[in-house]
Image 1 (spheres, protein in one colour):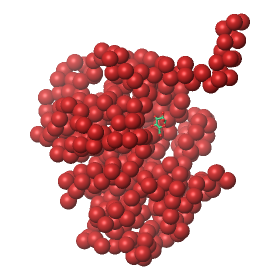
Image 2 (cartoon, rainbow, N blue to C red; image 1 turned 120 degrees about the vertical axis):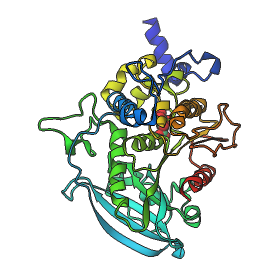
Image 3 (cartoon, rainbow, N blue to C red; image 1 turned 135 degrees about the horizontal axis):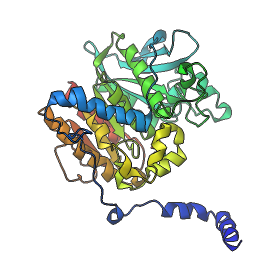
Length: 415
Ligand code: GCU
């Protein structure tokens, strides 16, 4: 009774969040000792000896583990994606760019689609490389451009529909146009709204087997659904004569950073993946249990992952993989990991170490992954390898500074 009373008093003063915060470790000296699964050792203990071993056997083995234990398999179905260019304006942004909006239909019916917003620089020589990623607030929030359609999914928010341009600090459209890159984005809610409704909305029900009402325990959560949606957009890019589909960088901030890495892993048509502050379930090593942990993410955002992932809450050592292997799945393609020093929830050091421990896989291809083993100082990007990294000063966000590094990294690999 006394304890119950104490709990009521503490809750009244908002102290439960204090108690909660106590469970989160931000002390480097309290990071447990851990052994990471070696990307270059098969499940049966044999060594991966060659590039062919990696491509033919070890990569599929790791991919399968991420599919069945972390993000969930995308059900087999014949992809019937088709597209309609809804409008195209060659004089957008005062003539700087061409704006297009494309309906990407998920099945052969015209009922379920997402709207892809694209800007392509008008000053270009032939096909353009592209940055592509999900947005949080709707396509219309990435830029004040009045002509951007507000998606039906966003309109459902009623009074909470974000203002035009509300997220423009995160999308330096003009800078990208000037640097010769196209930009494409999709509101993630067009693919799967970001809340737990037992997978009744979004794309999941479109692919349920007869009688199925929710994904099986090894089937797709929301991150897999979002990643699948990104692949549907890739089907479109392959048909767009303005876009160099061999130079598409999939990128994302935070939950969308987790998604970008997973999209790059499952769809090798993405030539580059960029993770910004992706943290737990993204670039950060789970076994460090620093900042957000598997248990935390499973309790706060259980719909992001497959049901099987729940068994690893507080049991990270039982995970058959860790997140450095997600980075390794990009090899030999370039991948960039960005952290922010004040974003300790996302564990910047754990994000950096994933790059370090993915590096031997690049070695199999005769390439350098991350060229350094010590974490660089704040605002000193490491751009020379196939794995790029920076830790920016400041908080959890995606800023002009981050984009400037992504562009430099893309210039090195795409131009
Ligand atoms: C929460 C969540 C993170 C996630 C972030 C975001 O903080 O715990 O895992 O990356 O939201 O997507 O903004």
